[in-house]
Length: 126
Image (cartoon, rainbow, N blue to C red; front, side):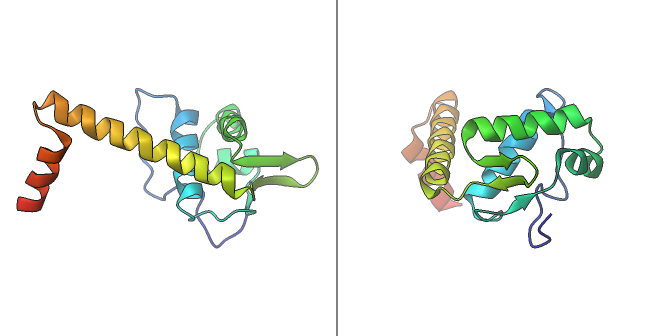
């Protein structure tokens, strides 16, 4: 594994209500789109990821399967698993995260009886 980045944050907390592989995949996705894990970086093997995080190898394998489904990582038989070098895939994943965050923000505002603009105004006043 490339020692210039951490695959997952050191203080990664597991939410017991969600599958671990999804949480790992989402966290790694965010680290890829933010540039903390650069394009072309070699990732640890499934076995190393599982051992390093104290999870079942099946969980680590499902994490990588999910990231491959998103197109964010590629596995080359006999060579390892790498972050994609396709900037368009990374940009699309970034856009998806942004859209999800904006929708969640608007939903939170609506649940409080506010508009998104009103919530932003409250933040400015604080």
